[in-house]
Image (cartoon, rainbow, N blue to C red; front, top):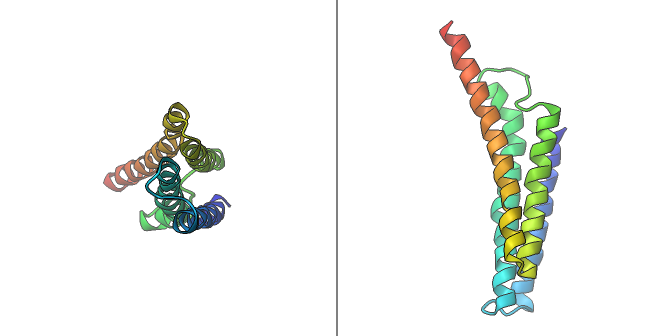
Length: 137
């Protein structure tokens, strides 16, 4: 079940953010270059990794019922796997490239979570459009 995978990934991102936060608190100078890069990774893990995974995980499970589609999954198994891989792989790559100071890799890796968000939004928009069309008929 991809919804549960997203919830566990959210918890993993939260743990990674906690590690980054502890490093910033205890050993890394937050004003220096390494501190700035670690702060970017902290933000990625917490704001994008933790939050987005919970939104996608819970949304995939709840939205079909809320918009009147019953138990029909929001995403196909292939699309759900693609969203999971793009979201979590992109966040991990962006955090790693931020810590390493690799600007070009950071920019390219940020495209993967954006693509995951676009796939999720497109599936949701398609479901809402289909629902509104059937209710008019």
